[in-house]
Length: 284
Length: 187
Image 1 (cartoon, each protein chain N blue to C red):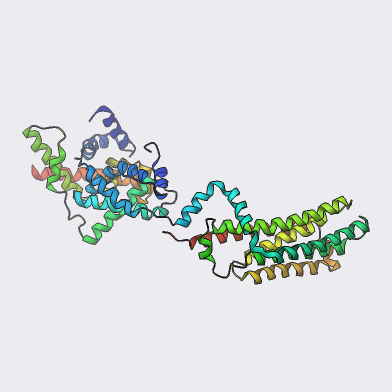
Image 2 (image 1 turned 120 degrees about the vertical axis):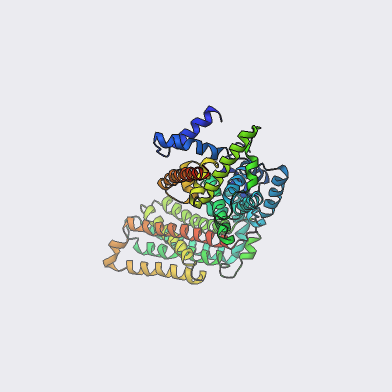
């Protein structure tokens, strides 16, 4: 035993708050323990252990492996997946959405022709009802397969279930928000002073209905969930038309609140969907 | 690969990297088997089997590690396996360190007198260790053979740091007292 080893032993005993007498008594004992005879691992036994462990190595399914490999290029993959899923929506969805937007455009044009000083409560009400209708339809169409046990089909895709859900949301919300922004642009070009208020009137409810629908779809069928979410919004709009509540419920701060709730709902729903579906992914 | 920490190596192993597994085995197989050998009473074949089972559990139960460091977690698995083994085979304290263990003591060639003297000392120490409780032996070997820090021992055994210190000092005190009484008996 060299000096370093002896110092090391003393240090270990000092850690135990040993008295000098104890240290003197224990040092030979600890030295005997430290100098216990060694047996050696042979190359053959190491090879044998490795061959046994090779059989026990954690295996990953091809699906998990593919998801892992997809991670470095998430955004590109997400956009590519979204592009590939556009066909999922069908012509009817695009046409109905465009029709609803057209109604919105007519309302906006009416506001412009009335002039900024005129009352815009009724047109805003139409926008508040029609805006979330887009996300209601979009959610039903995009997630119609959720209750029909298509997990196996989704698992054979390279993209993860979360990526698929995100891709569909990109399509639905992207299209709806795009249409809405076009309306706002029209409003702004027409010189209306209420651009922000009217933009909030359709954007915030749109987010709310999409978020609530997806959140409720964790427990209910997607059609029921979307209907419940849109129905709740319509009820809220109905209550807000009562003069007593009008000033209370339609303040700018309260117009932002539905959007916040919607975004929170979307986040929670996506995380739950991700966790729930990953539990069902094959382990090996 | 050698520069990677145990935790980084385990991450790679989980991802299916055999080279990382070989490095981890190379790093721990010897010291782990030595520790198990001391705990089970110098049964090298059994210690090797238990070391193998420890590594298998590392691979199968890696998700249970959480944010614990690899080394204390590895020794925790190994110690639990020994406990289970001793319970199931009812060999607790009845498996003395084998006499042939004493033959491996000598790194250098001793003279005949020294050979006999060291053999006697070793034999007494073996007897005393066998009389110590499992919890003391485990703690003593983890510290003075496995080279785990006090905190690592606390993590491996799931006990407070103060208990580790107490077990070590009480273990050494008892061991010394057992050796003293055995020396009195021989004299």
